[in-house]
Length: 227
Image (cartoon, rainbow, N blue to C red; front, top):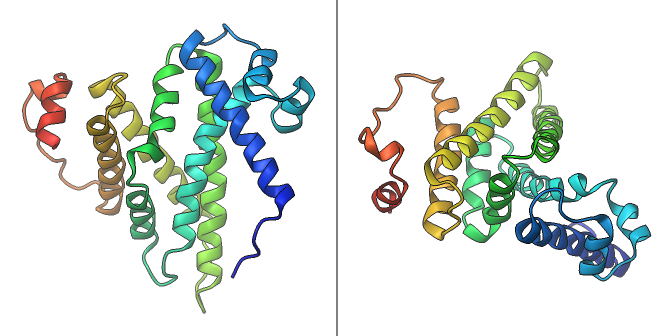
């Protein structure tokens, strides 16, 4: 059993989360570039110095939303059976994040940063960081398998493919649903993430046929059909 976090660790986690929440709230209310570190510190009930103890910039604080979701997915991945195929483990990890509230901050941040190059770059950097984390997690999996050789090309190609599928699902979801963050829309995002992993697992065989030509652009109809 892992050691329980100390009170100090819990307090640090709570402060970090307060900064992240305040940053996202200000982004939602004021838009990119219209608030400062001081605004975040005031909203989070901390000092400016404390902010910089946790994050190097506003962009880094916002990117922690993406980091948090991806870290949760990696945690779920590490809990999967050691003898399970890696892609199945990755798909199962995404399915564990079923609660729309879990994926909602990630989706909202994605919608709010599309028109800001600096924030978009920070979000991409968070996904790139996760690539390294996936490589490490996969390496741990293979290291625990007796007689298994670790092929670095396989590990890097696998991690890059998984991340690309995740980003593709986000792009398609945003194109279909826009800024809609309703439970139905978030359920579509979750399914797109799972379907993207399914395509990867099947080796991108014959592409599925879209339901209708209009469903790709008619978000309300798509939401209804998916439900």
